[in-house]
Length: 62
Image 1 (cartoon, rainbow, N blue to C red):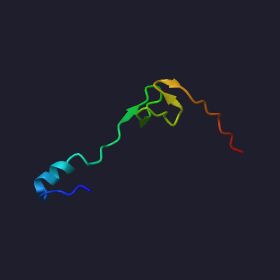
Image 2: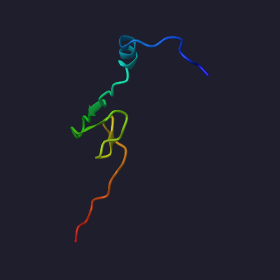
Image 3: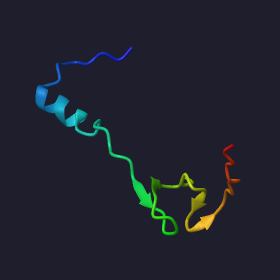
């Protein structure tokens, strides 16, 4: 088992942790509908890169 020889200083510990922060998600705007969606995902309206890839049937309310 690996055991460190000497203690890490707070400075070195902070340098190591500098890359652990959470990054915000990258969002895109769909050119057809103007909706915001996650990159490389289909928008809620069924569009991906300006083309309709999923067709939803209209909901009939009684």
